[in-house]
Image (cartoon, rainbow, N blue to C red; front, side, top):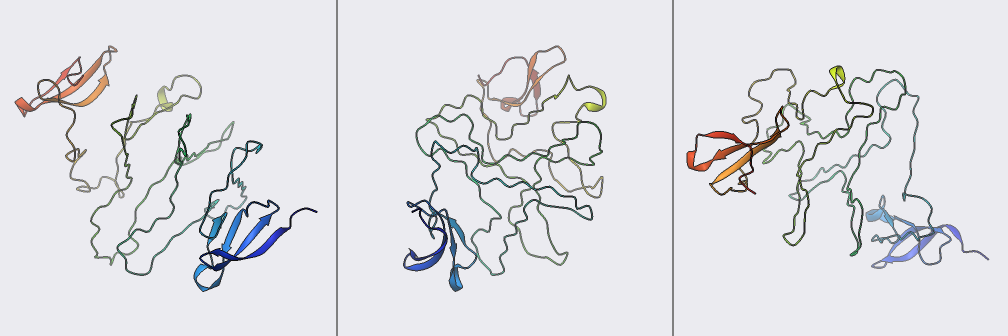
Length: 263
């Protein structure tokens, strides 16, 4: 006789608090647990009420734990595959996150690519169909009321924070890396992108929205042998690699050289 499948009460899910478990016939674990009662209603966790890792065996034949696919024929307004809102209505000095995602190397094993989040906007038509704007990842901040007079100590449209370790070997490292791929042929004419970085305001041509074009005053770049720092590395029209250098000993001078003074 097979193991019972379906909903069951877990009388001592964690710390003696009852939960509701979904049994899938695996005698060693329950896949998903739902919180019950005044405090826990709405909680969904894996494995236990407190949350536990579900391990997929080598015999598992899919490449994802959860697969959701939707197709919409709704044209009246926007459509989301998933809408998530996390809201706080009580004063606190902690953190409210919409979502936290972690891709983790769980043991000392080799991994090809470890990616926290992949977001793709796919123009899938093989012929025509005008798409007004294509955005791979949209990071926004907003103020919901013009009457807001509070203080936001730090405001970032996109924050990239990297932890690095001096014992590790980083062959190539960038805080932000931009790569463009030509699907067919080399991009020319109207197929070209305008710039690596584009800046605009809404309404257009706003004045004074930013104080600086780029602010790197929170760090000091690597010093060269003559107290130089490299501001920009680029390739000239002749194919030569150039370095735009600021020399601290001549504080007002910026020059371009063909060798990296920080090597």
